[in-house]
Amino acid sequence: MTNDQIAKSMAYKNTFSSEHGKKVMDDLDSFGFFRKPDKCCVIDSVNETYFNLGKLSIVRYIHDEINKNLTEEKDNKAVHKEI
Image 1 (cartoon, one colour):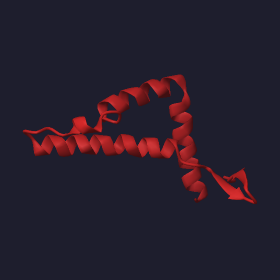
Image 2 (cartoon, one colour):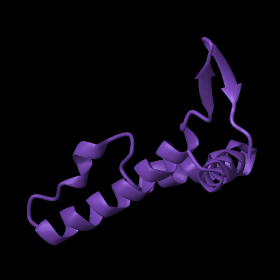
Image 3 (tube, helix red, strand yellow):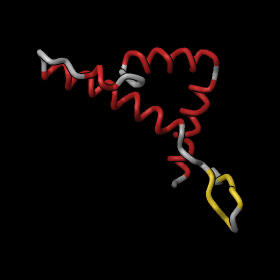
């Protein structure tokens, strides 16, 4: 992982770990069908289904950035990467 990638992930982690960030993430989870991805599909509208899947992919991307492991194994010990 490059220093830029680590810095980007840290920015996501810092942003969404605050009280306000958690509230925003809860709203995004609801908006983007994160907790109920099966609700993305709209039987009568393929376009709306694709639109909803796009929202879901954005929320998943944010979660992936927040949950990235920023440590690396060295001699069986977790070591934070340097930025």
